[in-house]
Image (cartoon, rainbow, N blue to C red; front, side, top):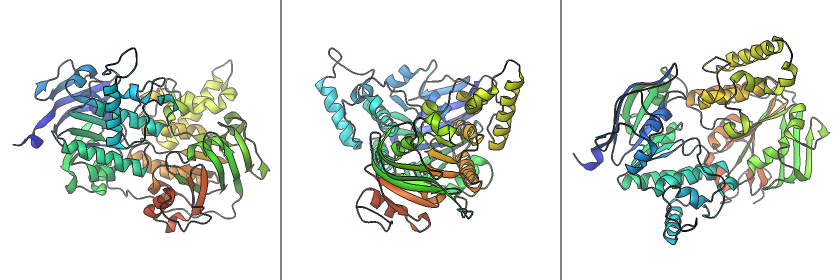
Amino acid sequence: MDDTSQDIVRIEGISKSFGPNLVLQDIHLSFRAGEVHGLLGQNGAGKSTLGKIIGGVYRPDGGALFVNGIDSTGWTTRKALLSGVATIQQELSLVPGRSVAENVFLGIEQNRHGMLTGSLRRRFDELEERCHFGLKAETRVRDLRVAEQQKVEILRALAREAKVIIMDEPASSLTADEVERLHAVINQLRCEGRTVIYITHSLGAALATCDRVTVLRDGRWVTTARSVDMTEEKLVEKMLGRPTDVAYSPRRSLALPNRKVLEVSNLIGGPLVSGATLEVHSGEIVGLAGLVGSGRTELARLIYGADKMRAGDINYLGEQFIPRSPRDSISRGIVMIPEDRKKQGLTLSHSVQRNIGLPAASSFRGTTGLSNMKEKRRAEETVSRLGVVPANVRSAVGSLSGGNQQKVLFGRWISTSPQLIILDEPTRGVDVGARLQIFGLIQDLASSGAAILLISSDLEEVLGLSHRVYLMRDGRTVGEIDPSTSAVDDVLGTLFGVFKSSASGVDQ
């Protein structure tokens, strides 16, 4: 047996519970040296928990973990690192006030008076040259976007020269081009004989990148197979326990007549937006596509009132509108689901009930239990409608899976019957089952008359859901396309400025 077929990590009968919830049950699994092994499953299937057990974040309640053939009793993150196991967590764990380089080498820095040595600086430059992430060593992490912070996490794992690297949704905030670079890095790690445990919701990426894939469902092992023997349809069937169509639902036609809800003209403001123009009608899903740094999120924040506009015009429901704050926008029927639900959308320590009831908190206040019952009833109706699991509205939102957290965030705002809904990365970090549910929810909201502005790094998602799509580059809208007649490759070419598109109004 050669080295590439030897088990570097072996799991025997691992189980794990959080309170009464059994998250993993009797898992038997092995990971080989020099392979990329995908861990797949719906949110709540247990894949991230298993990754954290291997990385020393959690201790199992039962079973055994072997690394390099050694029983890892009393396993911790420090012991894992010393044994060559590094983890890239889905929840970013960076130090905002420190620089990119300081975060990359945190805990292994050989510094003098708080300054990185020349050897570590050279090592950072080598890592950057290897990955081509475009990161500057001196930049403070707090000044980076979520996608760039995720790149820092990847570099931090690589800096430790780990033999086993656990990647938990490392591409969830990256553009298609950046994902390609990440996969090239993963392939290089494989060639170096390292093991990559790749936890992902992207079935296509798993099949294209991984040597083998393992599917978990409801905390149990379902199957481990070679990627070449699987298809996306087979994987979804294993994940859900039933056949399903992984394609997007047919794009629903617009209900006529529809009115113009939002019109933006030559908008300038925030750190990136330098001339954006678009419009959205009732019942319409309008996509906004662009590379990271193109100004998509910043444009959404201007419309929502989170950042201040400096020039241009916003017309909302037929009247000139200058958004002064998110509270002002919400009062007028404009809501936004941000790209980072944990930091910008939800209060994780509060209950599902409190999070859903937040917009109407003042109407629920009272000296008797009547107001609390109204809030509870609304939350229960919303949870039932969206299929949030578990359905207990008293549960802390932080205890839910990513897909269910996202449903709670949707539930908060749809209960207010908004006129305009801005969605920034609405399916980031959610599994295929929750993803399909969210697609249906977005289409239902549009069918009911809401105007939807959809932002996503997943071009297939934007093209699959939208009636029209605007392209953004360098803070400006550079064209409008019909998604039913546009190919992903052509759109990417336009966004990179490589060639002219057939998009109307393109300014190259």
